[in-house]
Length: 488
Ligand code: SF4
Image 1: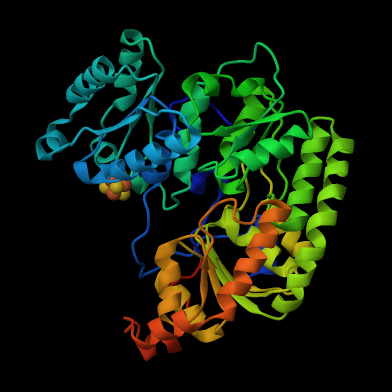
Image 2: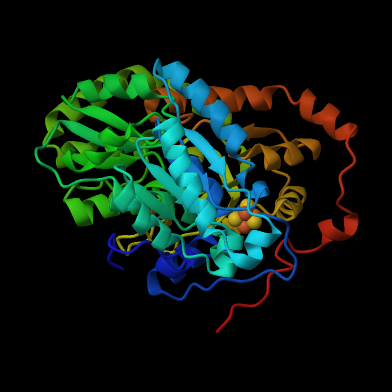
């Protein structure tokens, strides 16, 4: 579907990409159904709580320096504000910059819910501008504003005439989408439609969409080999820098789930090529990604020279550890942008993937194609592993772990990792987005994996002292017991 940045809102992942949160099957079935269009969501008749897309939308935007986020919502919806403040303070200090972004809630109450609160929203935006002089204002919507039909777009249109800065509504009502990654697209839509300007010139810059730029220095050094600079977004970026995204030579991302809307939008609307390969995790991912960057910026020879040099250093070391990892069995539970990428890396290291759970699944990305990581696995995976889609339904994960008893569990969310450890299964929290980046990250990841498995006393001790809420009855059930049949 073509991207339309002239309207105030972007469709949810369910409506745009056919994304799902309920599925039980295997790799081949999932990819085949995605390719032929036959994949359907399966609802649950019982489900644990999950996350709200507003967290992703407003969390991403609030990394931009010196702006204002105004969350038009009851106070509880702004519970992420303290996290945002702490993260911004620490991450800007690490970079040696300042970030004066403010996160403000309009604190809607019962009266506002009955009579509407567009007037107070307007007053709050104007007062925020007077006090903080932000470089842009993003107004988040919520379940309450969605239910009462609050006309936030009209308020935005009026304020645009009064205030000399970009202002956008970010339609992130929690009930709109079960998929919190819809929030990434809502954030990108606001930036593409309000901040980015057509290019006046081209610069030797590659847009790098990521979360927290922890490998910033390493990537700057790598890109120097190809005479380009990375521009990381959104954390610590400025409104002025973002306005020039269209001037870059290409866009890349650390995670396809995170990058699809911005990358495809910049390509479609501003002519900036989007590098859509498997992600730069593990050896195959890193080399495929670098080669495609080389193609796009005409630096193929420089890329090949770099790969040859680095291979000599890292591949023998990685091969040595692979011998010790061979034959281990793993279960994964992560967002889809990492589940299928990390599955590939584990297979490269000789680890058998016995079950991969993804917190949602995008049947296709915004270019209309199945995510590259899935195509790659269909061609290259040594086994047709079992697979489920579950929006962080920990009770299903614990059932899977109990049944398959893997050597190790991997997740990118600590709330699920700790349950595995309490069950006595070693778990590795793949917290940092760059933990497996490139040759160096792959070597370090392999070493961490080995360390985790060599000493299992922590898991044994914790499990011996933990009482889990799950009964034997639950462990005897199929993990997908509460999934309803597909809707025709
Ligand atoms: S927008 Fe809705 S789902 Fe999100 S935090 Fe507020 S009430 Fe909860």
